[in-house]
Image: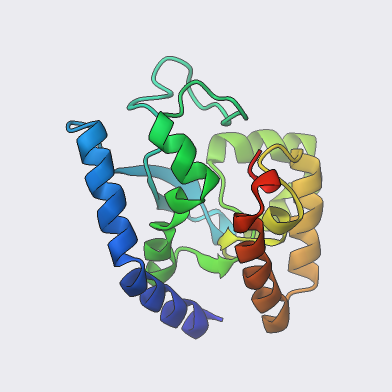
Length: 188
């Protein structure tokens, strides 16, 4: 799985370089002093902390006044361009760097912040099992649910993936991810 992840993430980064450049140019035109990338501490396999990379889709310092808050459907902190890159999932592309580094996999449960993991583990005792595998850019929960799918349902999907992992399942999830990206009902 690691060899596959390394090769695919390297090829993806090379192929997506023009997309990265266009996003960077647009972001700098819209907000010349704004940061391009959003970096945040997440917990990965065995609850090891790592820094996740995304294109910034929210206003600078979105959580300075509120502290950790999960993004909502009509979140006012998301910029106009941020709405576009979230809908098209372009904001997630820098995570191929995380895969290349070995912090993440192409497929696996989505990584979360420690603040929310502690909260979710209190509510769902089986939440801890998500950390037995590397987190992924995409996963079974992402192809079966939406942004608004409940934590409990996402957990069910993640646990199904962990119990039934296979290389074939990873390939199916990746193909289904492309379909989900093109299906506008999944982003609403």
